[in-house]
Image (cartoon, rainbow, N blue to C red):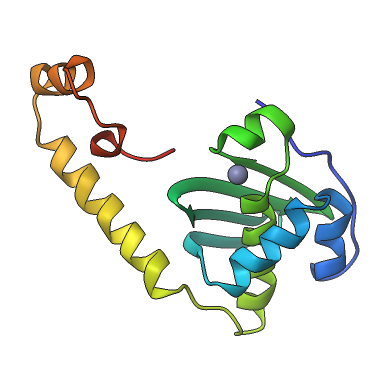
Length: 154
Ligand SMILES: [Zn+2]
């Protein structure tokens, strides 16, 4: 899996720092993801020695899992989307950084569309967790298997 190159910044994370690690068109698309409220923060942790750790879901037709880190001026991150494993830093990563910058300034909130997707995801996980192993195998190997029944890029 690809990793983003570590870059160093000083002080608080700004939009310009995102540009250093994520190129266009992903940078611009990420900005749109943020503006449209498609990022949902699962956890944000800030620690003096560990730095910033972010877990988020990003809704782009499917729900993608994004994890970001920032410590002592260095960025790290992964995304569960296919583009990230093939090409590296993607629009979901960019969108999450933008949302984090806005969130830090009390300027970010997730859209209804995004919150609905997260709610559907939680219900799906809950439904699947009640199935037996045999039922899950049948679902996965059965005729007419619909990927949406199983879930998203988690
Ligand atoms: Zn991605």
